[in-house]
Image (tube, rainbow, N blue to C red; front, top):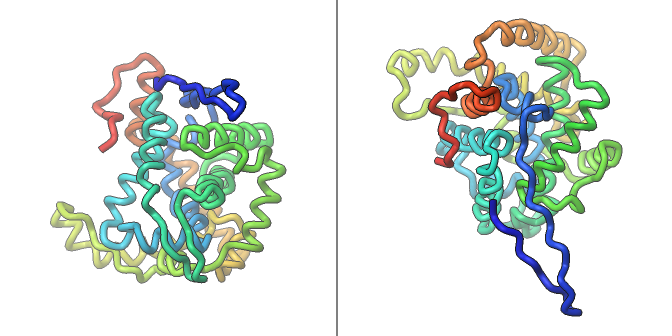
Length: 303
């Protein structure tokens, strides 16, 4: 673990250094949630919330490869997210790597305002979107989190912020303060940015990655349209209801019933799968290691 360094104030007195962030371990809410394959349904909704902020949307529009390499970007983002929770000491380095990566991301948003990816308010918003989406996804796809679990989840997201270099002063301190902050963000900041509209367009062309099996390539023109519609439907459904209106999204009682039926199928099917299919590879390896079982070849080193 990287050693702590002492800093001195203007009066020469040594300031108490901040403690090193604490990696996650079994028993935490995130340990159970973040590696569950059902969270794959939730991640697009979190991304939509993130890029609905004009500064974040402009950063993704200007600097991301989500158009030219959507599968590669998704794979790298998912691996990074898994490292945050299941990487142990490597989670700390991953947090530092992400901050280094974002140092050069800057530009002008759609309103002509300058942005920088590491502006505290913008970086914190990207992190903060996980909370309502995780709660909504758990409610629809697995089991609702009770009040105590929601509070623990929020405390753990603050802990995760420590790992990612997000100062606690830039995050609401409690769930109650979070919802006030969230409502203000929805009312004052979020909008249907160009990236939001693109992500929620079921006709957006998405090619298969290089090296895909020949049979899949032949079937892709038939498979892509219904899969795209399902993705947009589930993504819209897993957004916090208050966020849909500023994004120009409609959601009816019938839509909610359809989502709940879909969630019921997912909720009944996933627990029947073997553990290696219920959890993403890094989560599966970490869970086995924590239980003292031989781990599969799921290397934690960043790629």
